[in-house]
Length: 108
Image (cartoon, rainbow, N blue to C red):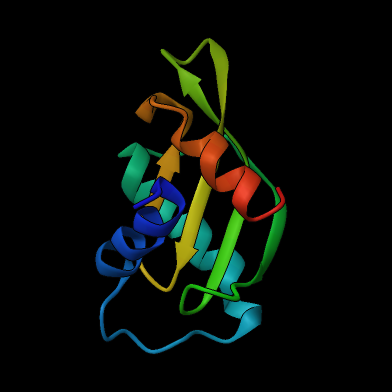
């Protein structure tokens, strides 16, 4: 079975089983919440490049870049992919080309 077939199934299970779909106007705030949970801290800025309803996952997908303060002096920026509903975010730091995989699949 190909990774493209398996990966969305894992996202569905990890994202938010049974959680109701949010309204589209609430999605940016939910992306911020997912990134806050994932980073474990406040972040300096989020640039969402794409937020849209997913055709194969329940709810919405979002991708972009998030910047966080690194020791209070410099900004560390990395790409993200978020599934809403849920507090599930994939970051560049997760390695293995995961962000590349989802960015390519969802046209980010």
